Image 1 (cartoon, rainbow, N blue to C red):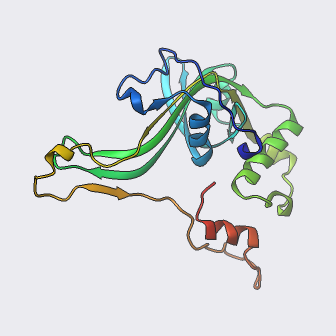
Image 2 (cartoon, rainbow, N blue to C red; image 1 turned 120 degrees about the horizontal axis):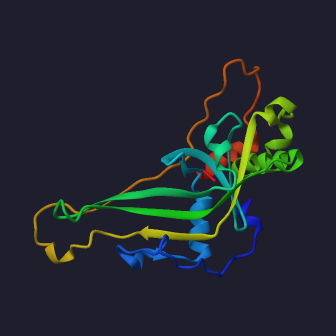
Image 3 (cartoon, one colour; image 1 turned 135 degrees about the horizontal axis):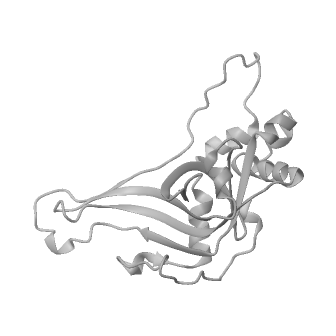
Length: 227
């Protein structure tokens, strides 16, 4: 859904929470850099502080403009406690292992984003339904209208949280090992790329004979993209 928004040339404020201190040249506060990582990563981790103790939970998320949404069970104590709470949401993608001539210089190529804001519960039923529709459509375009409609109980059992991004930073490493000055050492060095992609589908038990994979999903698998 984020693709529906025009390119954003703005930047988030640099604060004590988001200042990139180690290897600052890899950091960015640009909206475009932060949003690109949020959009390509399906899984995020949301950090809460509840009763003085830290908790981090994984969940699916999606972005719309300057807002990030995530969902979970209405019975979740984290989501119930998160209303009007400052939270931290992070996404990380590993793109490759970086093998150097020494153990010290080994690294990884990665993209990561850390965003801060205040969590709010989406409690309007129509707005919640629409948010869940956008989640499915963001992952599997065109699928929502083919599904059985959610029951009132299913909607009630699902919580949707929304957070406006107030502060954010991205950090990216992309390149070979930084030890070219040790190139005379006789050991292989370079990058072992890592890819996350869709592979052949596994039909659900009980699927009626002749039920073909929708073309939209076949195209999605062919593209190999996750989002």
